[in-house]
Image 1 (cartoon, one colour):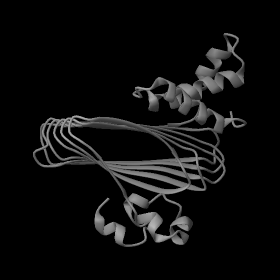
Image 2: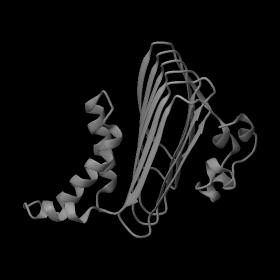
Image 3: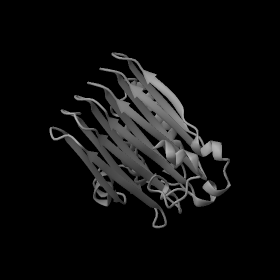
Length: 250
């Protein structure tokens, strides 16, 4: 986010913090809300990270050199407030991949906030976020894509879907595109709903127990966020950790 925004305590009046936990923002140490970690992926290099998000705010600023690839896959199951914020700048031909899952119950608020800056031509980015919420929890995804002047042939996409297991749960998404080039492809999609009852009925009709059917449907739902992981063993571990959080709520 812009440097000027880091000089003051964030509040819900700011777009990037509009769905955040106001009480946490008021009481937290200022440094925990404003500090950034920095990461550079050099030209031509590739890096893939996985992250289990802890309670509080984590902010990471990434710079991708020409032709570099960076992938981040994250599970946010913490509370009462947990936020992972990424700002990624792409040079010519670089690629950014993000897959995130929020899983929460009670009064937890869990957020992914991204800003992807296509600073040079031929960059690509793809973001897939899935939220599974119950109780009075909230899952948020705020994703901004900036395509600067001259960053032609940019191809950027983001997709958010939320599964609300109980009526008190909430999901919010705010896709934002700011494009100053004319030869680009930028797309976003969002859907928020409940469990597919027809799919559950179909599975029950074939002898699959209701609790098993529900777990399989949730597993397939959150698995979308980890499809692009190159380490499939790690992908299976992340899915298993997410399902563990759901025990007793499926």
